[in-house]
Length: 120
Image (cartoon, rainbow, N blue to C red):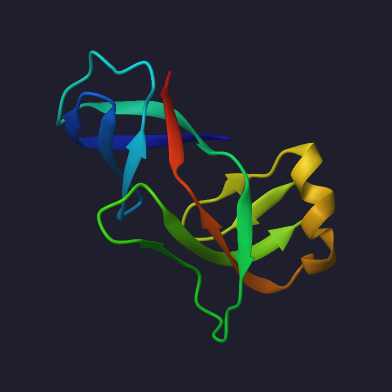
């Protein structure tokens, strides 16, 4: 899934971006030649396995865990389109979607190790 983003900071492979008013600190394993202030198109992916966390409220949001790359992402799963809908939508790969398909249409959270970015 592609997003238009604004680059706020670049520190080697750590890139801070903003998409629709939501700030994310992402990991870019190949780095970038872009600098703060650039507007670019990017693709975001959830790195490695993620775990399901409980969610008592109905608010979609992303919460950074401390000063790490980890995030708690709260939203609703759309199995048919393979999308986890939150403040920023994320595609869920075919292998992972079946593990969490029982949550289709329900509010829940994912704890992810990091969000990877590829600048296109």
